[in-house]
Figure 1 (cartoon, helix red, strand yellow):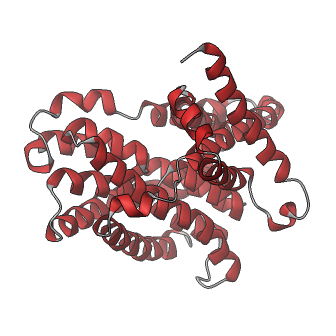
Figure 2: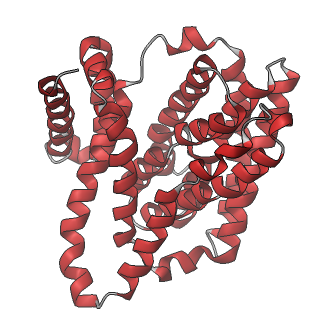
Length: 339
């Protein structure tokens, strides 16, 4: 693809992300407290389905991959400037244990439910990892070990997009309704523990605001970090979960961006307060834009025919895992959010 087409694709994505950020401050959308991230994913889905050639251009140019990987990961790394070690201490060792239990229990619930419904081990591993850890990124990391086909990967990602995006919109509404009776801190534990994609967690946390924003991201990033022991577990048992040839791919799949997120949190926490207060607003603006870019690109991939291609079994399994996530995260948030 020519350089001009790549530039055109990049300008479309960047321009629509800018539109989403502007719309979030324009009445009546500003009164709805919709974050630019949520507006961006809606715009992306709308554009991707109405003008499919834009999706094709963005994907074939490589801009889609850049946005949903590099831009998103850099956005998450920069988010570390908004979080201090004191805030991480709010979740403590209990928060780490909470993330560990969520990841591994959800994976095995999904894996054995998939096997009971007749799915092969590769599909079971791919679908289960997406809901358990960090969405599409976890699916791709898992695929590098279990060696699933592109169709199996696509189906697993479809379940993540559908359920994760739905929850991203529903959770802030649930909080506003008061049905759960959660404080913002409790809602942060709940959303960070049960949302699929990192971008979903960031968007939902932004929408609720306050403590929920930082706690949601902290818990979600702890789940992302669990990808390291998870991949080690898969690699050591690759013959059972998918392919005996997958162990060599473990090192390539370690989520380095999650490690850098922690590094930035530590560095930012050690900065003098006056310097931190000076640079954080600018970094936050850049960070918001990067995350909005990633969400628009993610929205482009939400196609109306996803339901037909995946069939019903993966969605039943994803529903089972979501119910499990809601249950275990409700219990965890009820306990941890009051400490």
